[in-house]
Length: 193
Image 1 (cartoon, rainbow, N blue to C red):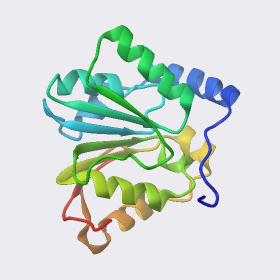
Image 2 (cartoon, rainbow, N blue to C red; image 1 turned 90 degrees about the vertical axis):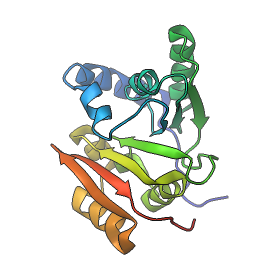
Image 3 (tube, helix red, strand yellow; image 1 turned 90 degrees about the horizontal axis):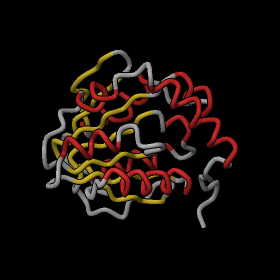
């Protein structure tokens, strides 16, 4: 068993976080956030730390029936919400993954990974970044952002500069776009997992 294994937040904390995120959602342009990575119809998307599905559902609509969105979260309550919303909205291109990190996806299967407001909350950040590198296609995009709330709640130890240095080391990724704290990295070469 892995030491210091990540655990989901307790139900009460999840409900508080959900309330805060639903309020903050009203002040965000989600379509702009998910479009910055250049999503195309037919793309395979990994929403890593999908939470309430703010990125999951708009992405599922944009990639269409030939695309797919993998919604990963460690919290079973989040996965239950995604499943219920998927059923109610009749979106059949969303697959949920209950996990702290391991996606169980094939190598180089994903076109875009959304890592929004998640990384500061993760204990083993390098493990998450390695898994993302493994599943992301060469030329694929990693869309990253972390707002103040996730940084404070997670006691963030990896700021944007450290993330850039980590991802750009050994020419694994290059920063393709940056917009108001939203970073989009492009995977440059095959990474041995």
